[in-house]
Length: 407
Image 1: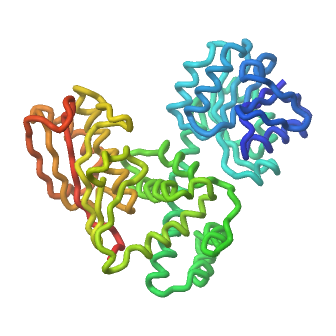
Image 2: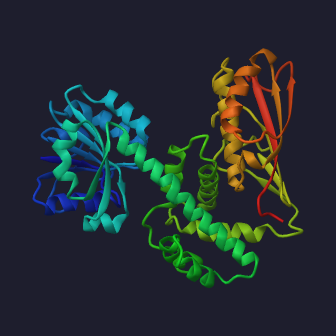
Image 3: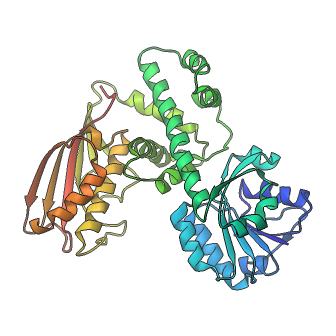
């Protein structure tokens, strides 16, 4: 018997395919939902009680960890959990710690959207021990083509690497259309020409996004932003910029639409960058809100000025008190998100100004900064101060940058 946890847009058609293939399936969804031919359980633990195979298709790492923690007491010895969400290898490692030692674990996220899930033409990227993979190989084949990536966590890692290329490519195409519009190039003409290039498949998919008709939600914009957040790495400057674009679109209310909605968002943002537009106050949703007395950044023409960032979380608590490395990471991550909101990276920074309360901790800050600023460094000022505006804060940093393509 198979337990299937998560009946969202992808999960429901995948569960139906298992039924059609002749499997006995028990399903559970946090919001009660039935799938014809299955048994509906009242809880994750009840769903997995008699299952030799447990499949999870949920939104994010937190949801997967929460549901499997609820299911763990009901898992039987020798069962295998097949985690098919996009959660990344670090979350897969945490799941191993949640599960009993006698329960196997395979990470098998998929490439494809609702239609391939319905038709059984997904690409399944599977990672796990040879023994665990062998036990679920036939079931995974019900969903589509199985690509075995390696050991535990390998499937999750491969999925993030793939998405860190595919999603930024769509954002790049959106920016190309906005650039073309600024030059007077008709969008349909540009897409037609791009159709004959390696970007042809993407160009053919975005036509609904440049008109009044909404594209069918196949890959949610909010999920794309989540996937790039999971894939964040200092080397991925282009992916970071794309993530900022998506987070800006989410904050503009487009998170529930298909990823192609980013084309309209970029076009509208581009039109707002017009001469004489004055100073824009920017407060991206990707960083904690300010206290209302300042903005995280301002944009005047192509000059982006970013306010000093400190290690405070969304509740106003100090992050990493007494730990310069952790506070510096938080500060640099916040700066990166604000830059990305305007399509910038640290390569676009002209000046960084840093305030520290103890100059002896400068090497720790420097080590973090070198992970984020990997190219030629910008102009820089570093000053030791007696204290910052909140006790426990060790560092504050601000930057000035030039926005690419802005007038």
